[in-house]
Amino acid sequence: MPRFMFDPNRVNFNIYRRGKEYNLRVLQRAQSIFSTLLDLLPSNWISGVEGPSYTLELKAVAIELAKIELALEDVNRDISFESTRSEFFYSIVGYLVFLNGKIPSLEFDDEEFRHFLLTLIRIYFQGSIPSALQEAVDLFLSEESTLLENFLLVRAGASGLDISDQFGFQVTVDTGGVFPVDVFSLQAALQTIMDVIRPAHTLYRIRYLFTDDYIPNGDDINRILDESRWRLAAYYYEDFRRFCDGIKDRDRLGRKTNQAVTAEDHSEDF
Image 1 (tube, rainbow, N blue to C red):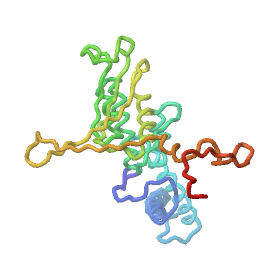
Image 2: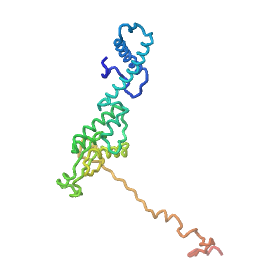
Image 3: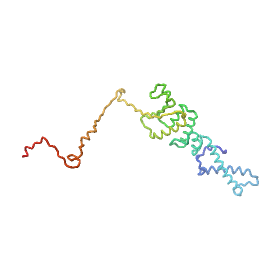
Image 4: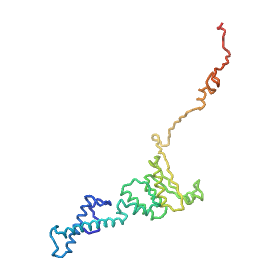
């Protein structure tokens, strides 16, 4: 096999130089180098078996050269963004994209992370245009989203906006009535991406729109069945159930108080 060429049968592409597959690759490459070194010797030095000291020394040299060649092949593959090994995704690709070492919290495997970074690079080189910003938002959202520029809304007569809002835009996410599971992580990830893609002089707002589905009653879509419920409560009702002057029939010092009695019939007491 030619040196410094991609091996389609290779399975392990990590940075660890050990394991059954790696050892097999080293032996295969060392055997090829060993044969080349033997061919460089004069005819009186050529041995048909690995026995003489010089063949053992050449075999040791061949193994070390094989390890160097395999390491150079890996480094050569790391040059391409599409083939960079997983351990170097961020150090080789990520630092070109993210600001101040910030990276959004992502639950991606290696290939998903590679695709995410490559897509983000493609979006970045489109420039800070609305379509690129929309693509950046869609990287994190499965829901439908809309990006609107404020100055266009002002021209359309939107209320609540004026000339001071001209350098801003809004991202509206239609959640369909279902709130995102981890909205705070999603918000932080969107802000990190926006800081990379958006123009530096712009401000933005991310909004989540909740909508309810209308289910008609029966076949008549214009007929709405409704019912009302009400509950009446008075906070002072509980006050009436208590004696607000303290302990009944006792004064402030705890002595029994005299109660005025009127209109009692005592005729039968005599």
